[in-house]
Length: 149
Image: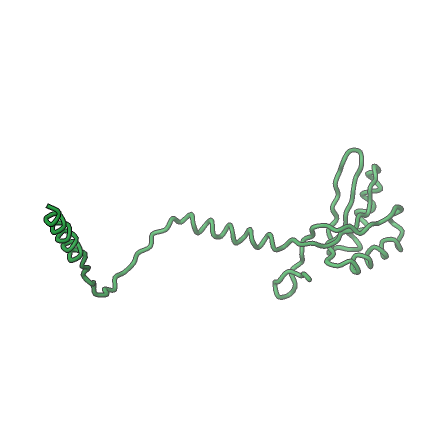
């Protein structure tokens, strides 16, 4: 009985081995058509624009020029800064009851120090001016690359 069962098992496995033959296909060049959702193009453009925007910002310095509750004085200082430094930004925030003013986008401290000395020399700001680290908007250079160090 054991011999018959062994013979059946061997023949069954033997047939399965021969049943596993794979026919080799010849290489046939066919066209592949890719169908994609047009929203993928919109998503790709959005991510590209987002990456460009993110690279416009970096670490730098700003001048903390003013903290006052006198609106007329704040506007006078703002006007002076915009007239004498048209390429720089003036950022005014209002936290009741004070108006706070930051000025400029400076990549390095010596550049900020130079502008600080000029503002103090002109005597428009009566309080202290402080150089504070901040996230600034990097200005593109002539080659279209952002100015950074």
